[in-house]
Image (tube, rainbow, N blue to C red; front, top):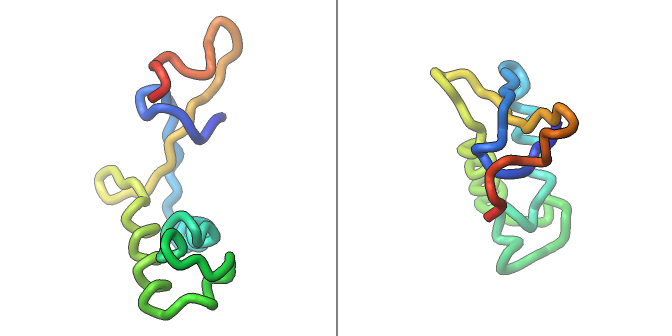
Length: 92
């Protein structure tokens, strides 16, 4: 299964109920992607950032969890081998 790619290419969804905290913790490891690290990078350790930045990052990561009918899930592209390719839709 591939995580990246176009949304149209994703053909399997996995219910991640009960793993919300792990999903948020994993996302928060990418300080430079979700926080003031874009403008004022202080390194990869989240504790080096002001509490308001930490909370803002936590909120952003939490909002990115996709839900259907209140159930959190992750979508993937399940590769089935030739002639299936990495994805059908053109890359953007």
